[in-house]
View: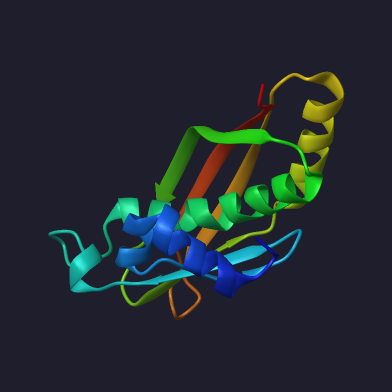
Length: 151
């Protein structure tokens, strides 16, 4: 899969269907930054008329994980990836379109190089910040990614 948001969104229909049906879409990706978006709708709301926290988590995780997938593919090696931990902070009701941005792509290639060189798994934390249409932060997610060479 090339570094392309449109192709990745097609991939998510088949491999991440719950995120796709909730409206999570990758809007931009390069080696250092990824941006995802999701709109508050009836289908992804909570009883308080805002976006369910797990939908925000899917969009935030995708903004980090898409870059990890891309770097693994560029390495040409068989490497597994998994979220080991996450932490989230919610600061405002999530309504309207929420955009998540992660700018931690620079952390990935070193971890991949280290796992290839040593054969040992690596971990690294990536942050994704969600803002509403007015640019007000609604949530921040931190994901601890683990990668290791497949046998």
